Length: 263
Image (cartoon, rainbow, N blue to C red):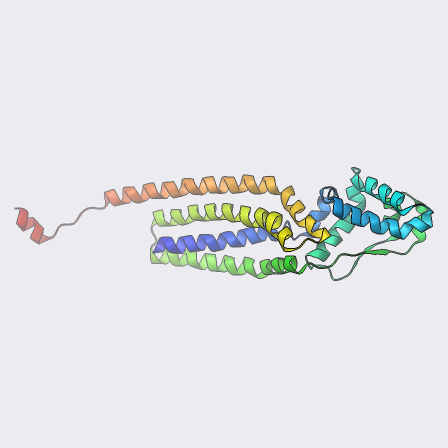
């Protein structure tokens, strides 16, 4: 019975840990700002930004919009392009996941940096057509309550397991299960959900930013998950060995009736 409490506790705590990771990577605009270069590698996102800027500035520059668009795209793909447009990337990300209510606007300073032409400095800001994506926003909002509730439930179940049957082997089994579940849940929630499930829920241009952010953290996720699973399996095997030793050391009691019968 205690093992069931430990397994349930491990599952709840792993959900809380995975949701926390999701909240601090895929649902963190500061993260997208840090990896703006990678986000701008997406053709649709980069082209949308370039098209909006080109349509807004081409007349002022007396140039064809396609030429201005090509210039902005070249700037976006340069090593410093991410730094130039990182604030726009972060705001667009925040808008998509429902953290930003205000529209995403590109001001005169960014217009100058993106077009490499001072003549657009007198133009007003232009708005990017980015809206909140409801399925992504719902997933993000669910992490806000899922993290504390799952953590509290997991801690409570772990405590109940210890009270019901405080055997070291069972406690170690629960600890090993926790490591395994956290590793598996980390892969599922931090990689599979944003990379495979989120794009299937919505095909908007900026949805592509979600799997890009997840993939940038993929090495950390898979290395961490692999270490947790292997460590957890080692602890589970150790707990089984301790349980067997305890069973062999337990003396077998015999009744007085049995003693008289064999004497």
